[in-house]
Amino acid sequence: MELKQTYLHVKKTLASAAIDSADLEARMILTHVTGVSVADLILNPDRAVQDDHMQTINGIVARRVQHEPLSKILGEKEFWGLPFTVSADVLDPRPDTETIIEAAIRRFRDNPPQRILDLGTGSGCLIISLLHEFPDAHGVAVDISVDALGIAKTNADKNGVSDRCTFHESDWIESLSAGDADSDTEKYDLIVSNPPYIPNQDIENLSAEVQNHDPILALDGGNDGLNAYKKIIPALNSQMHADGIALLEVGISQAEDVVRIVKDTGLSVRGVHADLGGIPRVVEISFGEK
Image 1 (cartoon, helix red, strand yellow):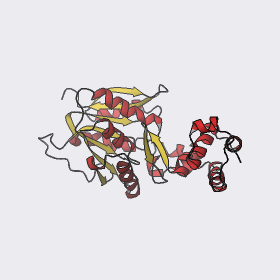
Image 2 (image 1 turned 30 degrees about the vertical axis):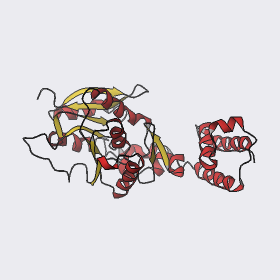
Image 3 (image 1 turned 90 degrees about the vertical axis):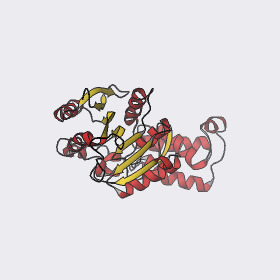
Image 4 (image 1 turned 45 degrees about the horizontal axis):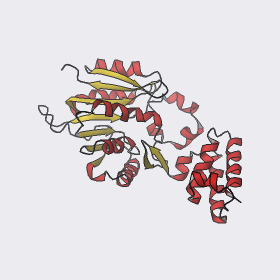
């Protein structure tokens, strides 16, 4: 088949399976498998697609129409303009989470952080993107999943920051040292996290792509979706530098509950940052006037 014919066939097949972004994904599949550019799809539509490429394309499409995420099939997802390896062991990086990166850049524009902690790192998309933006910073990435840490290490290598990042297997900060209570030397200027925040009774209502292909540990936030915040926020007292901040992603309609937990812990909320859709997405925490 020719490029244009293949593209139209893939697009139609995906659309018939109710894939919303059938047009975009058809282009992504063709460019990934054949190595042609998007421009080639337009300028050289009569170019033949090799038989082995056609078999690979058909195999990918067969999996995608079963609502396996394309990123998991191709093994890669872009975040903050950087390539990230993904697998069934990690949550797919999502555009909403880039709100954390944007907020960090605004807060540290004039005084870049030196030490960054990422709790529940998953693919490593947050810590790696932050180290890319702050080239003098060093990072620590924590996850309870050994398999997720393996993916994060791969991504640190891929994006050239592995020499500035260490990885720890831990249930949040359980295995991290609190450091000297009278010194900020070993504490963090910036702490970030995109913890699991889906109430467990809501997981069955998620899309098939998420429910069946993202790790449950990265989704299940307990009965009210707030379990992780109840562990993370009190721990900020021992891990955060006196002048530092924490940026925590929250789910839809959860910002007020997380703000309440922050205040109950004696910390201060510096602001709540909305994502591109206008949804309150990131709670910014500090010691306030303490």
